[in-house]
Image 1: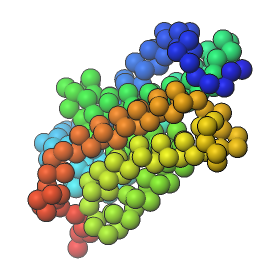
Image 2: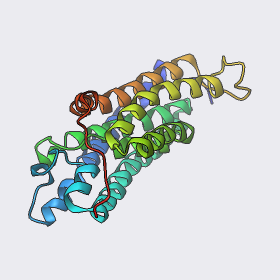
Image 3: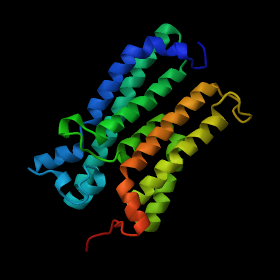
Length: 240
């Protein structure tokens, strides 16, 4: 089986890939913050920041509701990635294509699921900011990048108790960490990658996609960034 991804690899996976991306978007559109609030005859978007995500759920309904939203939003992205990988892996095996195509399809499925969470078709295209779904994406794609991004988030959150600060900086760090790790350990041309089997095209593809992921999360936090710069962003504090 060839080790390097090429443009020719994309032809057999085009149709099943597009179907998987559609499924990923529909899964992402299951915004569980909104769904939970509907069970309460409410809409979480009417409260707090107006965002349909875990942080606003925490502030509006409490920690257990936030935990449930986190788990369900995490799972939907994981499912989207796993389904896509399984389908594309069968196509890759049947056509003797590069295994790199499977990894790239996972990136795309996770990103489209994240977009579904942000712009859910079921709820008027007004959703969350994609932090939890992007967390699942990073973990399921490359645990090494996840450790770096999580460490950055954890340090900033422990220091400032502001979720948006950790999310924005983590999103900024992600494509940088992904490029460095992929180049050093996976790219065939790296002197450190004794068993690297990834081509330059693969390196470029995953770097561009990870930059889209990080950039999209940062864009969705543009109002938070403004408040952070102004020093008015509220931290998460324990209730008495």
